[in-house]
Image (cartoon, rainbow, N blue to C red):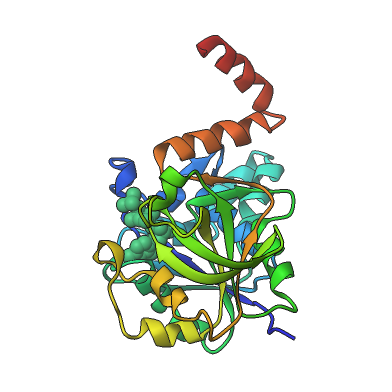
Length: 289
Ligand code: UTP
């Protein structure tokens, strides 16, 4: 039996330079898709997968996220006084129970591997999930729930994967694949951001991982990889052969909200699916196009 995944790490210390000037004083993870910040989508996804402890690896200028998951007494009192109980409940329900949120700082943005390593003492010696909030996955069964279900009984390390056009492999960690049943692929190798000509496949990792704590021992070395950053992919590659390692082709649509076009597409797609703004947006788009 694999050990239950109770903890999730949210690396949110990146500078978000692709969204400047919006991200000069506001964290990228607070950008909203329709009316909810990216970080809240990620936290709700983790909650739906049974996660009980939420570990944020933050950095300077990211305190808006801490405030977002706390009570806003003035706002709540005002909404109550105006009889807007539904809105007040909505604001309240976004707050996880006390004692389940943890924050640590990555003092310098040295890479995703380094950000995850910063959470090592909070994770301890147990399997854990990693969610990158700028990857938004719209799915009937939340992506991390699909992963936890696939992980139970299988154990080891599991990453969410999707096929990308070969010319895009340079944006992703890419798998060398062993046994593959069309849904779950055995990972034989991993390469970070390969040139299309060198990519071992087009099966690419998105920002959802279930990892074993041994990854921290590898990350202790602080080895730099692609772009001079401490890469999570390089550390994961060293676990292959030592522990089971699989890629899950999740069901759902992933939007790369770390990129302007992906972010705008997510807003349009999720808004069109909503009863309140969907019909109006459809009309407005019709006029614009
Ligand atoms: P990105 O590669 O999207 O980098 O990081 P970024 O700095 O956030 O954004 P750009 O490229 O400058 O626009 C992917 C995820 O890893 C986190 C980011 O916060 C994001 O969730 N990250 C990255 C860290 O927490 N620390 C790092 O050192 C690097």
